[in-house]
Image 1 (cartoon, helix red, strand yellow):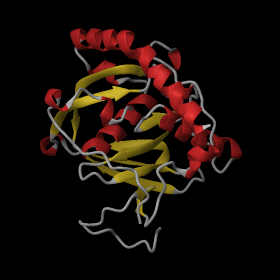
Image 2 (spheres, rainbow, N blue to C red):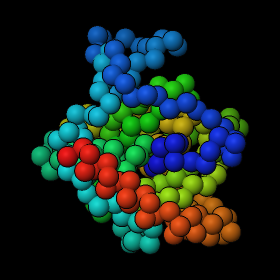
Image 3 (tube, rainbow, N blue to C red):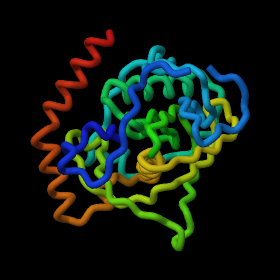
Image 4 (cartoon, rainbow, N blue to C red):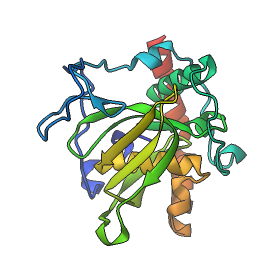
Length: 245
């Protein structure tokens, strides 16, 4: 999923959430529940007192090619992760983080680098501008009951549809339950744009792109945007990769 700064300019937007600066923020002191004014970074759902702009996983990772719309691996449900605590799974998480960072993404699923596994990583703000960073395997998405859902039409982009952004209705709250790379159970709750990210990435693992949620005319427009902008997107990714190395 693309960061919101890849969207149209403010006069074209319908909803706004200020992105965090990703500056280092105050390390974990305890596991007490954060209060409503606690704006610390959440790592795997837990507040921490300090966290770097570039996650540690990204520093260990290698950049992988991002798959694009039309590739078969993006259009089928992914396999469950069955082996936890392996070097291979840890390396995949690291690679996903670095690849996401190079592409200026807010989330990235394993099948977006050609790996057929139910796993995604994220580095995304919520509706209060609080940064959420982590990964989750075998996520199960829970949305509010239909009578309590608040759908928001907001711009959404995807690293596998480079350069395109379209409005997509999503509920403003979401919960995913799954496991970390070592098999520890996780529950991650999201609001605002982070809730959108959790829904977007889970869609990937079910074999769907956000394009599948668009009307035929809007899907055609998204593909036109991709054709017009993809080379610029690739140039920015290459430039960022060179600068990081």
